[in-house]
Amino acid sequence: MLKNNLITMQLAFNQLTMRKFLLFFVWMILCNLPVDAAGYEHPKRGFVSWKPAPHWEDALLSGNGAIGTMVFGNPHDETIIVNHALSHLPMRVPPKPIDQASRLAEIRELLAQGRYEEAAAIPVEQSLMEGYGEMLWIDPFVPVCNIRMVMEPGNVLDYIRMVDFETGEAKVQWHQDGHLFQRSSFVSRADSIIVMRISSSAKLNLTVGLRQHPIAWDQRAFVEQGINHAESGAEGQFLTYRTGFRNHYAGVPQGFEVVAMVKVQGGQLRTSGDQIVVEDADEVIILMSVEPTYNFSEPLVPGLKVRLAAIDGDYSNLLAAQRTSHGELFNRVKLSLQDGNEALLQSEAFVVRARQGSTPAIIQKQFDAARYHIISSTGINPPTLQGIWSGTWTPPWSSGLTHDGNVEV
Image (cartoon, rainbow, N blue to C red):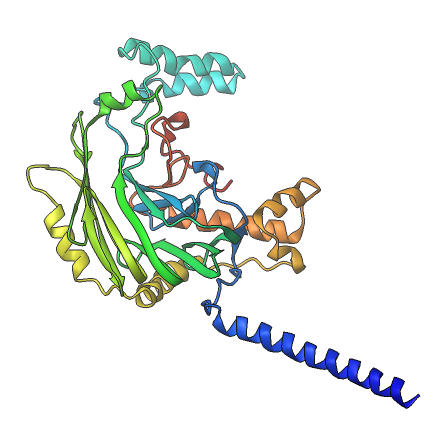
């Protein structure tokens, strides 16, 4: 009996020792793993998605009424479409509006008699009399350029992307090889620039450049009628992009000039052709200015470089100014409903839930999103049919300045 008790005690001791050893072994592993920075919190007013944007219509949006960005959120090969409120591609000198006023009494009389089709035919008849001859499309709202960023590949875990309506930030986050990677960007209303930060607990290696937005095969002939040239460049810590329009008429830009300044903490950067290569950096900050030009003989690029170099590149300070400007506008109105846990659903889950019927959380989220998009795309002009964002050279209805339900939905 004593021998059996001793054997039992020895086995228990061995098991306890083994558990202690395993706990110590796990502790040693954890101590040697890289320490991740804190991940992004779910925005109180905003949305979260679990997959990158497959199309430009699904991109994360930010804007200050003059400049708009569309973030796809691909971890290793990111595209950010850059828009400007004045980037309507000039195709022809627009004719004057038809003289409908002279026939207003006639139109009203027909409407009063319920003869609506005859009333609608009068503007068509007038347009033919004035030489229109056909439907003439307005100048389409098109992208200025794209930011293309390629990062080191690896296995991606815990991917999310989000928009914070209170700050206008578009954020992307994922884990890769034991490290947390984060990219955040917004269009500053206070400073009228695009601000981007890339950070990780690992060293950052990436290539970034400015590119003309891709042209589909069936769009090329149309685009070449309107675009004269598109040039990318890199010098020192600056990326440049200049694009010119073929057709000019009073009141519209001749094209656009863009400058992006790349700043790194730790590591180094160098140019490679028309791109900037970042090696072994701890953090990367990109500041970008987008301006219409009305005279290509007087380049804007030198002045834009000086302006960007004079801006405090601290992301926290720039974001604080954004909270004061954009945040003050957005937070003037708030709709509070009994949303419960549904308010934290990811956007894909929200869509599935909405198909089953509306809820307070869905109504509240739609209300916030609609206000965010209207505020972000109102400034130089009222919003177009697509707000201040376009990812195609041939937008539906040329994306005219028609304010209806499109922006909200």
